[in-house]
Amino acid sequence: MKITNKEEYINSVKRVIITSEEIQEKISKAGEYVDSLYDGRPILLVGILNGCFVFLADLARAITVPCEIAFMSAKSYNGTQSMGEVDIILDIEKDISEYNVVIAEDIIDTGRTLKKITEILKKRNPHSFTVVTLLDKPERRVVEFTADYSLFVIPDVFVVGYGLDYDDYYRNLPYIAEI
Image 1 (spheres, one colour):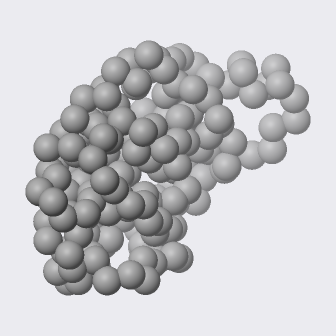
Image 2 (image 1 turned 60 degrees about the vertical axis):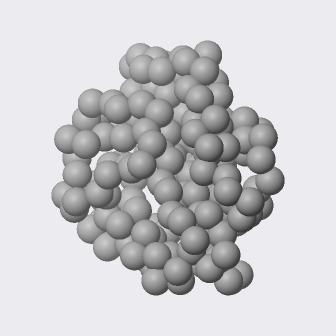
Image 3 (image 1 turned 180 degrees about the horizontal axis):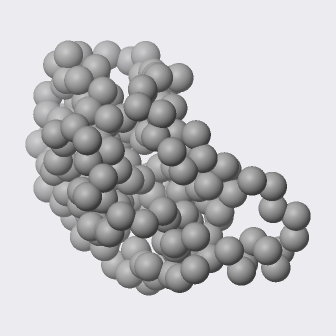
């Protein structure tokens, strides 16, 4: 899809599902949750690129205990369609065995990406392992996977905004919208 003008961009949004204010309110609570995991060992926030970058930045600012940030990148979508396979494009190189690892994910849809990343990281023996997701879409799940903390459960609609995209567009919207 190639967007050629601002009007086309804005008019393609069918409806706002979650407002910016609702997101910020839930992120504050998620920050408190992550703070509660702190036991003196460092927390490593792991963002799954590219969609997580907005959520991870706001979540990191909501956390008040010491934390570090790392990124992984996985590819499993082409446009609106899951390809069924998950390729790890960028991996964490540091030893995570002394960390409380917290994955910050933008959306859990089929569950394939997070299941694969979880399997990889758990083999590296982190002190603890937690998954926090901005959006959970359980109707689309094709593998068994449940986040430890979900900010929002949404229906099976294609959403963009707040880091989520359609062919790399819409990530900059400050809310979650259906297109």
